[in-house]
Image (cartoon, rainbow, N blue to C red; front, top):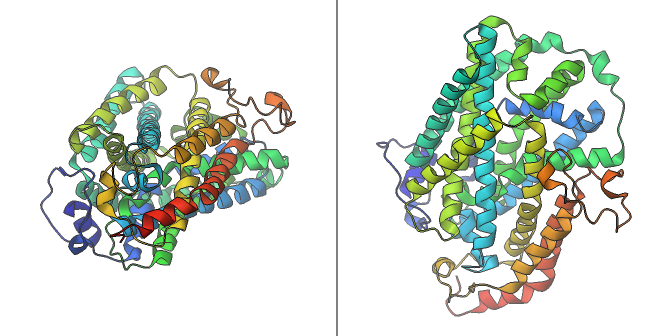
Length: 490
């Protein structure tokens, strides 16, 4: 997979469709330093959507300072988890959901691979829909028409850019990210300067504080909206680094690169949303488009450019990783075709959000919390498995059901199912009718039921993460030692 390796090294080469799928990167092709991880992670998370998370956080009924603390902890901690998972990439030189086979077995890993695939397809769908809605809002404000026709054209353009990038592969994506990072960064700074006078600290400081449960709910939402949405792809970049690369460097540059832009955008987003109840409410329906209502007309087109590019940049990375997850789930098709299949599903989902959903925030929160639970369970298991291992992965055995990692080991699968069942029992999604069955453990555990104080604290995500991690440390330590003691262990 030399395409991505060359991209990280910034060495010129002719752009071409990447045909490799789950290939292992050979030692001779692995170059660079942990510092190179900054750019893909920064580029993937420098989106103006980060401003909207200010309104999302305040929507939990908490104060500015509570929302800021919840955001800082949620963002940094969740991307720190990505950093830990990224260490597996430099140890094993394979995609994240292939390295996961060491914990789940070769075919047992199909369960988390399917979950990972659904999550990444969901994220690319959300980003595509948001770019479409933002474009239509800008056209409407300019008087160029923002109705159904505009939305259809915008959806075609956004989806086309995303699918083409995903099909072309990592080399194109990484070069695109460099352009997106520069353009988005500059125009976002301009946006901040233009709307700074809409901040009223007196209004922001007057927002009353919320309860501890509301604070926890906001914190977990930040975790699922940021790092837990990327953790299942965290090793896809670090696998191009030499085995001798510093693990601390991998963790540090991944965490820093991914966190710095969302943290800065969150602060300004909190100040804007806290200064205007109208803007705060509008963001729930159109998270990006609502931000145009306080802009001068002359900057609307540049704003549309920065919004669409930032969202497309994230969607392209998601469609690439979703294709890899689909292949890891056992689907035997070329990687470009996998990306194309995911693109079709993305378009279908975006059509629903843009043309049929009553609001954005309800389905979005339901999606994040519901899939955040099994992904948190997988993350806990994966982190514990990485912690237990003292050697690099035996890469050939990641592809052989009769190898040291096994075929379908029951312990990690049962842990995932139990942690997910407990987690879903501790979260609620009243805004999505099809998810009202969740929260079934809140009453039996004395947490006030589905209408009590703990109903929206989203404890299930934290519970699933802890159960997966502690369960693996307790139950799998001996098995990992046996694997690493086998003849020929790396």
